[in-house]
Length: 426
Image 1: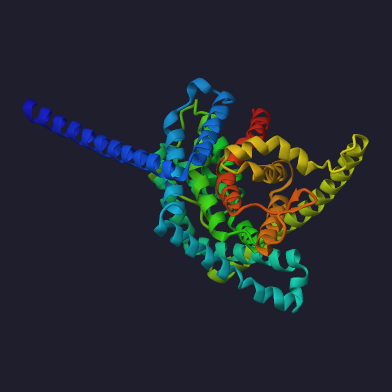
Image 2: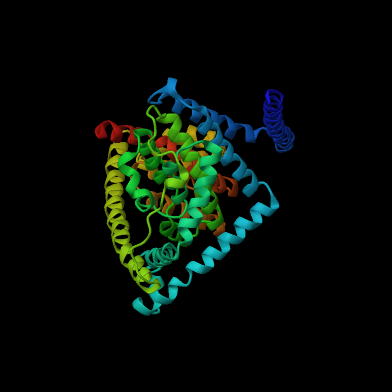
């Protein structure tokens, strides 16, 4: 009997060693491939890798409990983000799949034009943002509500959350919310686990907030696409941000309490209150009213405030013979090193730094509206510089800005905001 149990123990250890050997071989193979691939493309790729290391180091320095950091979710989250980026951006199949998805989403969202044309008339495009962009938000919200009613979104979010929970070792609540934020907004995703929110730890609550700020809500995603921003790039950024948000959260606010909810099978995601599909569509459209109103009033207030601030800064700049002083230039100089460390060319990092400033201190709609102008200027061609001011970025800079900014830089710039909130919450 004793020999038989020893034999089983030996078999178990043998299987563990085999799994470890296979994983190690896979990691070594990927590292070797990256070394040769980077050598072909030059040393530029190493700059963005150095930026990733820099951001991780900064978050570790400003961590709430740096001596309590559990490194498994941190490295696993970065690894999942890296693997997703590798599959999506560096393989023909992955790139083709996400490019196809982006085209299909863009085509699907154009069906909102039918309702907009009926309500606002044939010349609805004359007021592009009000009558073209905002109806997309209403349409997407309606579709998402219908998908929730039939249970498809709960199933999809549950599968993605399960994958992150297994690979990263995060708790079921934070994994489900992070997965939900890929498809819905930061106000809707916590409602998936609403009955369990009173029992989460501070670290889990921090993870819920971080996941909400790091990804793009589905309804807002449609609005950004209507600006002319690549749908495949936005989709890629949102998917890659989910594991990165958990990695960032667990590094900045490590778990110091014992989670009360650890059994994945015990969680039941909340279901919609609609009784049929038609009611779900109506509720989705009605729910979007508040979102559309928030977008409108925030844009009006922030753009007016930005215009006033630029005017005041220009007046101050005139006193020092620098009339072109404005908020974007100040942010550009501040965030220029960070954008360069993200892998943006130095000549484009000034523009990207300004976009990061808009997104961080004002409103992301303002930043994407500015980005859409740069994209349209690049498509039209013409002179790259007018009066010494660069009019558009290179394709690589736009790609990097969209896919990397949401995944890493935006998280790090929001850290101080999270910290203030949690000090108040205490």
